[in-house]
Image (cartoon, rainbow, N blue to C red):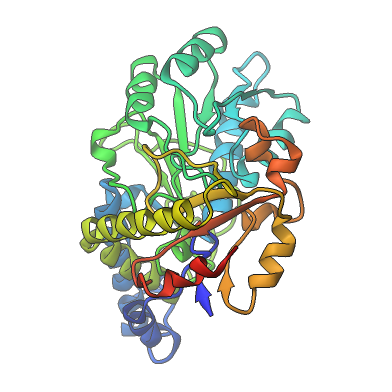
Length: 377
């Protein structure tokens, strides 16, 4: 079967699995223990992985907080900032996001809205993007405590103008968070040049790493002063008191190795995904002209992610028909039971939503593999 649902999850890279195995077997120490070799080896492995993730993202290693994935990172950052800075009477309780965020952001904002926070969900354009002017105007009106805008959309693939938004939020001194889960390894990320991005979320399983591990990047206020927030989980004070609990060393090592590979292969990955996307797009335009409609923009997008409509064809029936041959999706794996809120917010009708599929490529796919789409009539 041809797997083309890489925005949902990716196959673990062989080098990642190889790096993890010792920490599932002989190197089983707890990095929070002291002095003996098993503990020290685990501690060194975690430190190395932290440096690998930091190198990929362009931040300091002590700004990397290991979590179970981007969903936890999003919850941790948004709830943590809202509670720590907004819990007092008269405090700023205004929060801003968009209508097309990942469910782990939207539902967290809804949760806080039910608890007295003033939550704004901003409109987007036909490609599920915001504009700098739109955010500048909204931020000037509300002065939100925290704004959360995803870097790249997980259904349509559109990229938001994060560099410009970073500059805007750095200038006004307001907290800015971005869910970068879909762009890591496919778009250059250098937080040293994006000082306005105070918080970032990512998952390991989107870049050839294991499931159950991710990172929350929490930028320091200065070289020696950590940004404060209320922990999502209290306990032993691991991860600089941001996230308590025994560290999953094997998964952390896997994330570190996946980050190292993503950094080393970024340029080649982007080039290959762009080539494959163009090749597949040409197949659709040649063989199915008049029968398809693209939801994705042709520029400012995640390479290798295509969202398109098969006009007059129910997407669930199409996916079931193709399931023995190719793995595709109708949209986000995290909200598969509901019509796409992303496409709806981007102005698509319910009929258009129900005839949309998402294809997400990976670099090991060959042009020959994609011949299967020439058979679709």
